[in-house]
Amino acid sequence: MRRVSIEERRARLARRHHLASSARTNDVGAVARDLVGLHATDPASIVLSATARMKKPSAEAVPRALYEDRTLLRMLGMRRTLFVEPLDLVPVVQSAASRAVAVRERARLVKFLTEAGIAKDPGRWLRKVEKAAMAALSARESATAGELAAAVPELGKKLVLGRGKKYEAEVSISSRVLLLLAADGHVVRGQPRGSWISTQYRWSTAERWLGAAITHVPVEEARASLLRSWLGAFGPGTLTDLKWWTGWSAGEVRKALTSVDPVEVELDGGGVGLVLSDDLARVRPTKPWIALLPSLDATTMGWKDRDWYLGPHGPELFDRMGNAGPTIWCDGRVVGGWAQRRDGEIAYRLVEDIGRAATAVVGAAAEAVGKLVGDIRYTPRFPTPLERELRG
Image (cartoon, rainbow, N blue to C red):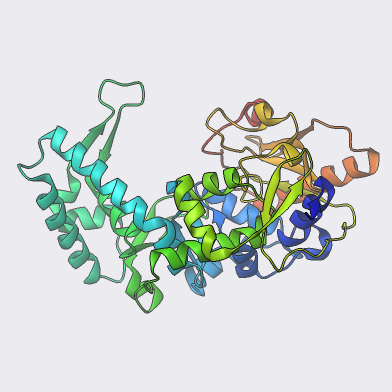
């Protein structure tokens, strides 16, 4: 059995995730494709994930690809998480992940509507509201949730989620209905109101925004395609990694793998990983590299089994729910964390000794991130212990 060492896994990561200096590119579409999507829960992370991999970092490149060229699309995908995907992966993610999210979320919303006593037949009521929302949006180039609620009064109703619980929150029905329509592939998030850290989007029908409806791909075909993409970008990976990253059951992962036919390889520590059958060639180490990756970066969040690149630093750099904070990488492993302070300074701390030369490169990289961000101020949606401490 072919053995893939930790060192080779780190070399694969460096090259395939555009993190080694020689692997960087100014093509943000290639970055998104080669990572099987950029995590988009934190809007700032989309830009910072892309610029960390660019030869000539530009904060304008991602918004341009998203809203002017429209070669990237923000969509709800794996694990009910927002991703930015290249257009060729959109139908795959839609069928392999988003559609199942829509089914679950629709059932949840019907349950909430029932508990709130919104209608005698909540399912029928919801279908009518979705149809009305689509009609209102189809009549416009784009609209905010508030503008749609003005046209469809039912969208303006409020729901209390988690009543009596610590996390009780009041949400508008418009936000839940738009989430459903987006997960079903009928509507898309367009340009935000404000800067690239805004989460207040204008919405459009998918057909108007993309020029055509999202192509239908059979679910099993889409799942196999998604696993091929993941293995090509992140392999070798374990079944645990695949189950976690996709959000599927173990049975669904195994079924999809039968169409992929990957090859087993031995991992350091005695575990078994999977790679594509044409991906057995050895990958050479790269020259030394440093990268500052943002919270929820696709690389940091790419695997469930993280010891080979994270070491013992998880409690400092992840929150209790498994969300990654901003990290510093050196040659394929996490060696520290960073944060933006209120005055814009990028503060950082190394949790491993990487030597004087590499430490100097980290300092220069932190300054570069500060200049790139400029006057923008942001806080990660899921603060982590070290990030919170550094932020002050």
